[in-house]
Image (cartoon, rainbow, N blue to C red; front, side, top):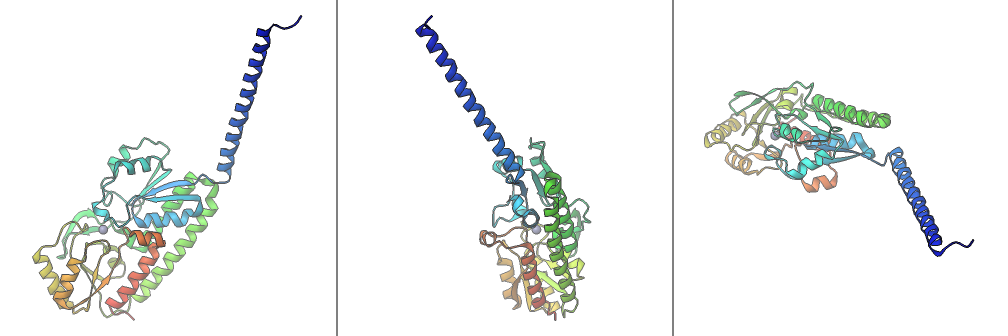
Length: 321
Ligand SMILES: [Zn+2]
């Protein structure tokens, strides 16, 4: 019996649905194969968000091509006055690892962490396990009870920061353990080599006084190499020194009879220029590396290069052999 016209079109319809389903299934299968291949070949990089430049630099070196690192601080921004924007919270939420230096520096971090709803995010505070020193409030050696946040300026601490970062990366991406460990070993070797050069170079200087026309950032470095460190401002560059503070600094510069004073990165060198004019001293940069400029970021400057340059200027300013 010949099929009716209706039955024929019904069969064609079912056939077409079947073909569409097969094509759809094949497409879904293709997509799933593609994404699993991507993961197997490591193309899905770990996303790491860091606050300050040293963390960014260490994570970038240890993570190599397996990690995408984002520096939360916009280039050139002074970090003590930085406050994260809603877009920064989004970035942290989308990351695999969030690294910060500690609550004394990132005073806003608790609020941010409360706002995070990504329960897979690994949050790393690199100050854990580091012996913090108390912050100095002013150039009259008054100490406050809060911690000095600039602990990355002690190379031993910098090495510990690398250790914390490598552990975090391995935890999130254990397949690449050997790769991360190897990169971390190389980086730590470079840090140790530079530390040794600091120790040798700074052991034989005519002067031991660092006069810093900036905020109190180099307490850790001064302590390690037994240098005397006098800064125009406290641990944050936000408070301007008073006329009395400046007069005291001028007296100190004259009494130690130095030919050089130091200025800081990313802040106006106005105070340094005033002091330099007043005391006929030359100005040298001493860069605490909190953050870098856009140009420096593009050039791929490293924390160790910043510290190399600091050593060069310390040797000049303190008359070291
Ligand atoms: Zn600082």
